[in-house]
Length: 415
Length: 75
Ligand code: SF4
Image (cartoon, rainbow over all chains, first blue to last red; front, side, top):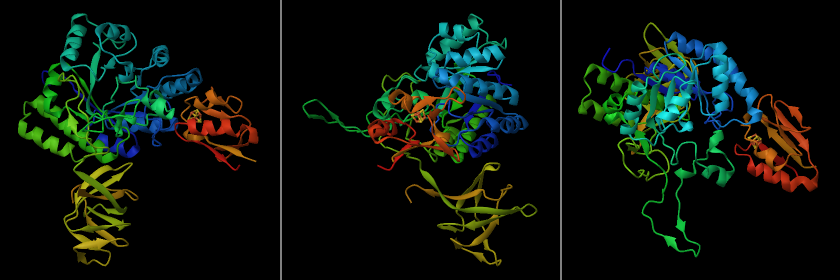
């Protein structure tokens, strides 16, 4: 073990596919929402209470910790569901609950469920950490702190010997990658004003991602170069991950419960590799360049360092959606897998596939498998350069894929 | 008769409908979701006939629901 001890890479799992992809990519832990009391309540993919035993089992078998996000504000009418979720999580063997409302913290302590403090609680100083330490073992720092501030906090935890309920020093977690809130996390009311959709109930409509014009009361318009006046770029820390670990951070969280399996797979894999190479002493600029390249192939709005390096202003994105350099197109479904020869059979549902195309196969159990369609065969055995919608085809796939897994081809965004 | 329709499964329990129209809506303390008072269930979707004079309020509720799970049908 290196000087850092154990570093945890925590991946988002907004769906079964994303969870399987995270596990496969080497995540140490996954986090996900259950029912409606989480910050991604809008997503239809949230897990249900009855899924918990299966999720816990899957994570357990793979040596991965499992966390439930229960981090909205809680009203009186939510209490009984909240308790049900905590009880269910405990019974199923879920590792911990991530919360920001004191009601959840209090209940977790009562029933002895491990608790982590959410970024929605805006922990920014040592006193707050001390207070929360009688409830929680792991705390996410507010995303607005600089790395120096985080480092100072870690030192004070050690100096003052602040321990969580498990008896270990409180562990500090930060966001390492993904979308940033334009406001101080958990304190944004834009969505509530414009659409009556409370971001703090997981219903954020992401007003900050839109273009804006700025006019005064007389209708004079302020000229601004970039109409995305408050759309923060995405955080990417792969280039200074060593400094983050030096600051004493032990848990690295990747944002993105609304993202697809390929995003989760790529981001988790890059951060896993980066952490491992820092620990082995092989963290080089060449490797960093490759990780950055790979990270830019999946959903992103352009990258910046976040607030960690101490810039005063946010860096605003210049585009609405993703600036990812590649995109996946759905082309068909998996039908069968011939284990002995390592060949998958697929039915083409749309577009086409050409020899040499890079493809992804994504499914709830499979997670994500990458392949290059080197030799495409039709069902009559004929080898072809190209197959189209309606064809049943086979090609080599190094790992098992399952019926109804989806087949995508990866295309360059500028193609 | 105009009808209020509630696709309850996707309700996130934000309380917005109750704030506007507590005659037709209340929060369930059991599962934290909204209840369309007197609504009749069919496969998880609840329906209720409403009086024409209540339509304006109902329209406000439809607009207020952040996840758009309330609909108003018929005039
Ligand atoms: S406004 Fe919509 S989401 Fe909110 S409680 Fe009512 S029905 Fe549910």
